[in-house]
Image 1 (cartoon, helix red, strand yellow):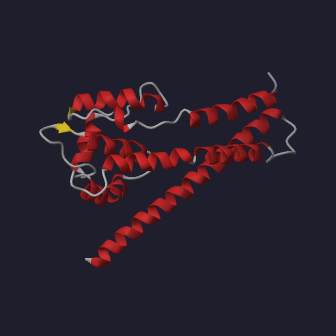
Image 2 (cartoon, helix red, strand yellow):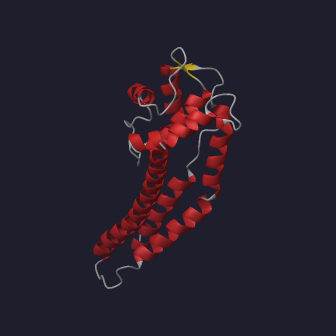
Length: 204
């Protein structure tokens, strides 16, 4: 297999990981309240494809108990979690990879307070589905951007004569560009959270 084919396979693997992304359809979530064991079993079944390693856990009992104690989700009703709890837990699953518990708490508190109850103007299920639809509508743009970064990284060190050195440096450049995207977006999210927090403190 040629060096070019090896590198093209790297890109295909990265894009394939994006194309496999999906979200839990609200219709797949049981309409009846679930006990903790049922919640963790459901999440494990639905999110197992996102795990990097086989031993990785999606959401554990300890995690969920901590989320309730830290007011990331409303407390369970008679030790049972309803569909809206499940939707919030799915959001937490994604956020916890790059935000602190306190930041997630700041994001979730106004959402839980205004839209968790059944008498809210907009249903939490509608919010969940609308947001994920927006994200996946933009997937094609994301894949094009990733491909562009990959090609730029491959051309970043044209003077390298050694193929192995070139592969090491182009891979490093690609990871750095993707990492910078993560850093910048995380910075923007934290800025938004801090701004909302400051506005709230000013009004008190």
